Image (cartoon, rainbow, N blue to C red; front, side, top):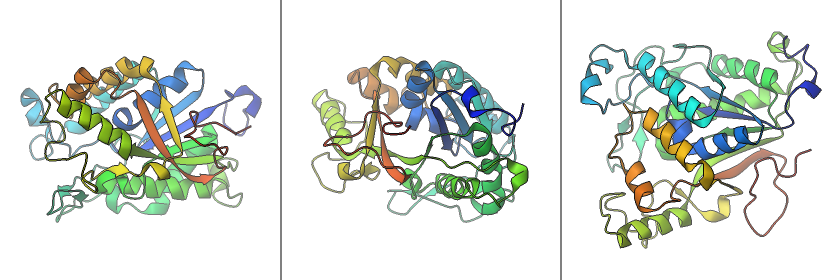
Length: 312
């Protein structure tokens, strides 16, 4: 049955669509959120825009998969994604346009090492240079079929400048607008308006508090060189006054960590992700979001604790 034939009453009351660039982005930025809403009975759909073919391989025995050698990392990372989604309980996850439609663009670090920038030499067929309308149309099809009330994507800088993260933001932003237009591509389904769009964020105050706790416990490796008491020292932190919602779920932390472990070629077992959680039990227990468009969160003197708050 297609979306045109399926009555809205047959769908779960709450429907969440999550857009990320690569396998592992979803577990890092939204693992708690996805696990929580799945457990509460919401429909959770993940769209991954590439298979991360250009990622660094952190497992020595698998280094031959790298793009500059066998160029077989994409299929392997798809397997890691399957395992991560099993850990989070997410059954509905897709690749934008199908597997291998858009290739990971890769990145390099800026001269000051504070962010990522596009590589000097770019491959053909990468996501960063994909036609925006073409890529967005693939997402329009999904939006009109899944009919989410809430859409999550990354911010305009992709958190730290990765070109694929930025492109995922652009594609998601364009697609949710086009999906609502009755005259745009009726072959992609009936129009659907997303009620609320939010962007992932790292709370500056939460990051500072976490790093202080790590330093107090003797950990000088995690976020080495970052002084939590110096303004502007957190390259990915977002000012708290820009944050609109916090999804807190310590009971889902084990699922998030299991999902992170599933992405073993990208996140080493001795990574700061796991060192931090070993030191601070609830380090990964909450995730934060900026309001981007649609219906604002209800007015309150604190962050909303539910991405669906105030939606009928």
